[in-house]
Image (cartoon, rainbow, N blue to C red; front, side, top):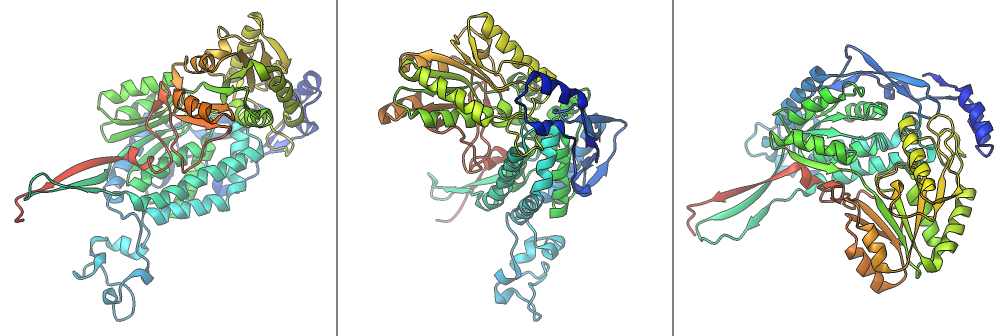
Length: 553
């Protein structure tokens, strides 16, 4: 474990932003239990090295916290082959094992244990000897994985804070959120139902079977380095698929810690594989994961531009795909809204993870009648609630952006807006490294860069509007449609706007909408498919039609 100390950032933050918490002047160290700090790839149940390594940096300080195996095309291919081999047995495992006390007395031996599978009269005969001994099937294993995540939540949260920059409170929240998908899909594994369809002919029966698609390539982003994995992998494993995970190069430690806990939970070798790699090796690894004929499914969360590239790569072998791509969420406040609730919703939606979530509000549209009041209260809330610093400090609510490129983008958007007539009411300054002050802009117009592209940073551009029709038109002008939010107390307006917004998820009088129980996904260029909820498993299943004919009615 390496201590993290950066005197240069401490000096500059003290000069540039006197309000930065004094805790930023301390040194910080990543201190987690040794088994969870893994730095090798995980393939076929083994920890594997690569020809080289790449550094993982703390975005708050720029200091190296670990060096991780830089897997390439060869390791990716090994992982795909291992997943394909494991799929042949994993797909035949049951959704839930039968416990000893659930076995009928007639199916017990004289000693009281279940009859072994070779006895033809026992319902256990379809389960292999290994499965019979372990009595651990998909639901039980996912639940065990959930239990282990909950047990180690503090250490898992520390990994997120140090490699992603999130405040510790948010990192703990992500682990709870991440684990909830394993719990949810451990239960959904038992509810993958087929169907019986009434036949038009008397001598035929129509059956619909749901079967796992096969090996799934899971490509995840850095902003939720744990939850984006479990939301995909939980569904895949519940359905009977096996997976190869490629985590973002900025945040591989969380993925590798999940692999360690999966192994402890008893997930069989080859079912869950992780191939970390650097930015330089990403194209080669991505090529394997998106074109190998043994891969049947691709699930990706990231930018729309990258998603389009992966879609083209998947097209040659016609793979099943799920894409959760970019967002540019509108946040509309109508005159009828409860302004205090709208401000609270804006704070929650915008400043979580310093504005680095795909469902963050990007374009704030406030009706003329309450515009000044909303802006004033939002500015006061920012002053009172936001504290910048290292995520390990308990007072910190705003950590750094993931890297300097991210801060450059926000700085450019602020500069562009000001050059076009916007005014800065709060923040606006670029600090040392990748820190950016939470910024409030007013007098914003739709020709400004911040209203045309996703920000992924702590920037609040507020646009004034007069009519509902005008607000909805601006909201729907984007070529993406992931999430949208609006605040109103007019019931008729609530139904109209909720239906008119061209997004996959709508928060009405609410700034945070994600949960394991609800479907997550967008429309237009925000992606394909849904994650989480009862619909998440469907993304990893094929429907097979079976016709049983020549029956004697």
